Length: 184
Image 1 (cartoon, rainbow, N blue to C red):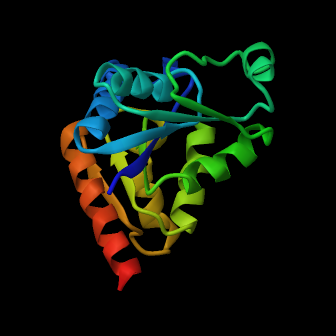
Image 2 (cartoon, rainbow, N blue to C red):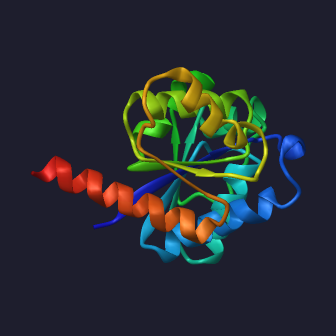
């Protein structure tokens, strides 16, 4: 069984911790090494570096764009197209794309991030999907543990780690458990 794992994170990485881009790249590599396909929001920054890692590892990546066409993706949104094996142009701008993006994956990993990443997190949490948080990367990812504890909605299906390899492994186990439950 091939899993799909989304990497969500900041397009503008000036707010991320110094090694966040390298960790994002390693996430992409680990997703492939551990037998999954990468899904991202087809944007720059953290998602782009995850796609770069997946490509370097010979993996498969899908980009879900907020734009309605390749031309719109490049000219209006100023987003890359070079690292995706399949690009889906949703035409739903960012908020609509985020809903489709998180639902297209079996689990979602959060690395660094800003408001859009927080939006993707809340959708994923509300959908009760498996979540991985790469702590120590800055921004949204470093706030999630505290946010979850203060929202009084339970812990969710969340695993945390500071190492990409360990986090992907933990998330994959959570996804397997979830799929097994669905099959029963």
